Each structure stands twice: as structure tokens, then as C-alpha cells.
Amino acid sequence: MTTIPKLLTSEQVSELLNVTTHTLAVWRSEGRYNLPYIKAGRLVRYKEADVIAFIERRTHSNHAA
Image 1 (cartoon, rainbow, N blue to C red):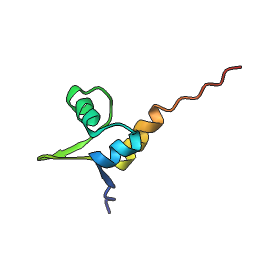
Image 2: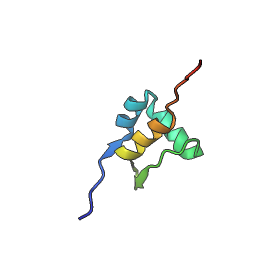
Image 3: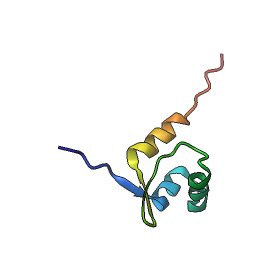
Image 4: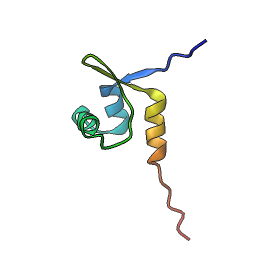
């Protein structure tokens, strides 16, 4: 059986990333960041797992001695 991923709207993703929906639109149009999205007609959705992976890839820690 196939598991259906949870899909998030641009508004939900913008809140999680603390950016505007316009910023997300710019990222999509310019291919600025590797944040996959699903487009069906005018609707844009993001897989929750892809957003989490995006956040994890950009998480840095500084272990200065």
C-alpha cells in the first residue's frame, strides 16, 4: 500500500520557514533553492518531508574549540 504524503500550502511553508509566500514564489521561479514542490494547475503544494529535509540541510552547528 502506498502512503500518501502530507501536503502543505505555500502559506503553511512560509510560516514554517519565516519567509513570505512571495519569497517562496521567487525561489520556485528562479530555482534558487532545492525545495521541491508539486504544481497542479495554479495550486502549489510542498511535501512535508521535503520541507523538513530542506530545514535539516540548512541546519548548521558551530563546534568551535
